[in-house]
Image (cartoon, rainbow, N blue to C red; front, side, top):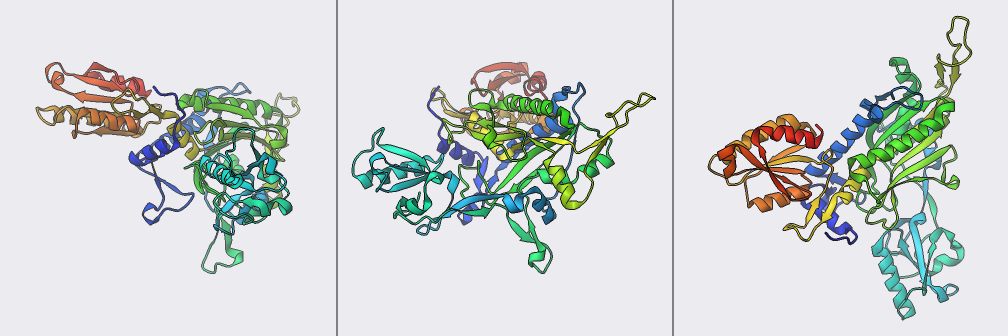
Length: 523
């Protein structure tokens, strides 16, 4: 099996060929930063979403007890994409959700300044040109190096080039000498200016400024503004979590790297509310569990790390933040963020309480002084919040990248080693030939498996082409097991079971296929 770095081009080609991911509006040339999921991709992401929903809301932390010694409790919520505009003023998104951007007057392209890097010849720093490329974009780096080599008219060996951060330059002096990532001439980039990342729209028929609304850039704020309603209408008590999944929108200046940085994406977020004195314990609890969870669904290994933020990285309100990061092919040897676990303190509830004049504190009857009758006086406080916030699109992409395997010793070298829990096709049933009663047996077995396992994915049945080609299609789709009805089935009521990862085959009794598959899938 090859050990060379995985090719993002090969992964993207497989995603298109097998119906995982399509470019949105592809027949019209596509639209940058937007992606559609095909039949297998939609089911893969649904399985990922369902796994998160089950393990974070319905049976949070796999039924473990939390730092307080009690079973963790969470409840679900579904909130609107469009919220009152004051929600985003209170959260700081209207005033502070900005990225520095630069425009290229030559190509009319736009870039995030903090994603641009510059390369130049070491001995040309004072008077020579700088060539810009986009961070973690090998194509623009290669282009910049080629332009640099042509400019100085010699090969640029090791030690002859230097890479700088774009933001470190004196814009007044250096910009006239910078060649943009896709430009031919120097001096075409504008100075950075702030650009708000929120999409806006209008409600009603007048479409005036008073009707301006925003598409949410995150799902979290909908939870915070419904905190009081959840407390008042359910029997939940601190500590508890509120979780939801849904679409969010960010008008990214430079969407790139396939589905990693998109303008429309799906999040899975939990806001876990607790007493301030217990918040650090809960932060560590969720940080460690989220890392363990990603490992459990197929990302175990050296490509997954947990990185604690340095103090200078923290948001002004954050007490602590950790990122679960994955080494994508386009970030290697570095990592890209998969999920952030943030200790947000009481910032969000406090902000919304101040801006809305609604009381969002919590009266805790289990705390305070002990009364003569043995009860508690109670304590009123604004809860602290721990937020594990995952990106489902990035999660699905990480699963595909990790699962992509090339083994040139196999007849069909590409396959996806997807964890059975998230695999979009749970099993395939093939009649070896389309005659002699084999299709009828295959149809009955397919119906049985679909009734038992169909809620978690497809049960495929296919009688066309050679059995090798049918196996290859299922390997590329990530199907973990194939069951073949053959001549032996007609004699002894057994079937051939083929394992995707090893390619090995074994005989299983026809009436035991359902039991076997249930054990393998954990369903």
